[in-house]
Image (cartoon, rainbow, N blue to C red; front, side):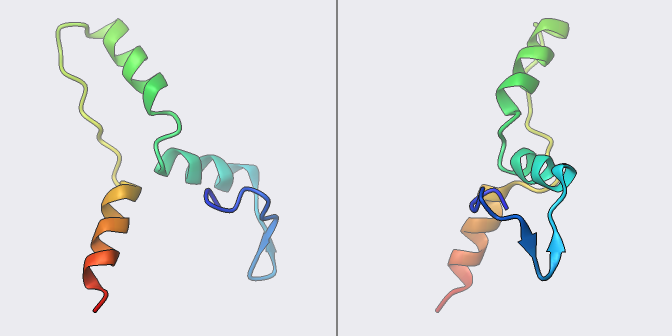
Amino acid sequence: MYRLPGLRTLDGFNITSEEIVKAENLYGMDLDDRKNIFNEILPEEEFIDRRINIAEVKNNISKKKQY
């Protein structure tokens, strides 16, 4: 969904706004905002990206598995 922003249906189902936001967050679209909020609240701490699924990692893994 993130890579195909014009996509409105997938496998016969309409794509919801929630799913679009989740896809954008998976790719880190909100990462700068998260860093800024974190740094305002805890300026002495180091920000760590704690997303469960990191899209870049998934892409690298799938590329390595191709033969």
